Image 1 (cartoon, helix red, strand yellow):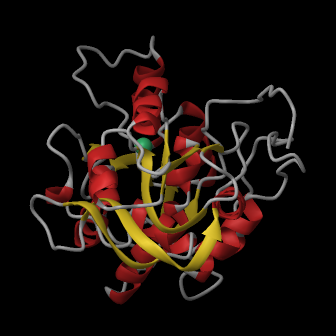
Image 2 (cartoon, rainbow, N blue to C red):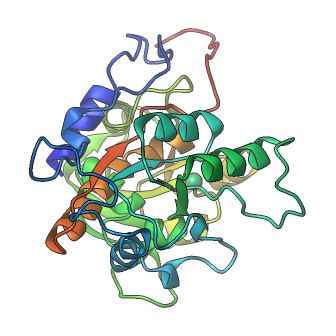
Length: 328
Ligand SMILES: [Zn+2]
């Protein structure tokens, strides 16, 4: 996981000293997270070492099987010809227009995103809407789009696994085991810190580990309370409170905690636990990308394929600045 830590350290550069504002709002891609296979020569799309999109999809299925996706989810290939050669793959959290333009400018033939472009049914992909325009830009440029969403959350080495590892947790198990999977697969993770830590120090670790975003990190609980058992869920995890309580976690780290679920969880807390740490949805899932790039690069290299893999530098966290009443 060295690549993750290096990448995150760089990505977190530029966090304001008060921890609230990111001056330039951009995540700096780290050279270490670029999987430059074998030589300095750029692999040619269609060259002898380049796989087809279908072959890349097989490697993806090996790492993040579609059977691990939640029932409501839409994962898999969104655009692209299976027979097309692929020499450059970009990974990103969101298929926003800015990210798609970044992938096209770099010359990627495949953009893999965590979030689906088309989660709900559509009747038109005319370029008169942002999503329609995204479909047009992808097809016009010959860039395939692939979604690895809850299958990427649930898998070993998935989003929450990477978070648990980055926060220094041991004895990690899923919060909710996958319906169709191994015992170590499922949504969210819970594990233990090697020793007791104050909630304030742990929150600082979370802040330093994640890419810097405008919204920073919010905490509910006593800053000096000692914690050890930590539950995590990358992305919006407010549906997992029952599992978090059952896991006897001292603190729960997730994103998008709304007022009512958070407030009710605080009311139901026992001795103040679980405390809550609310982070950026984008940041919590971005952390997975360098690890995913490395894993995909390894599988493709093992199969003799030459592919360059890069994590997008676009920051698609929607928030740009924050006002707070001051204090620490
Ligand atoms: Zn998400």
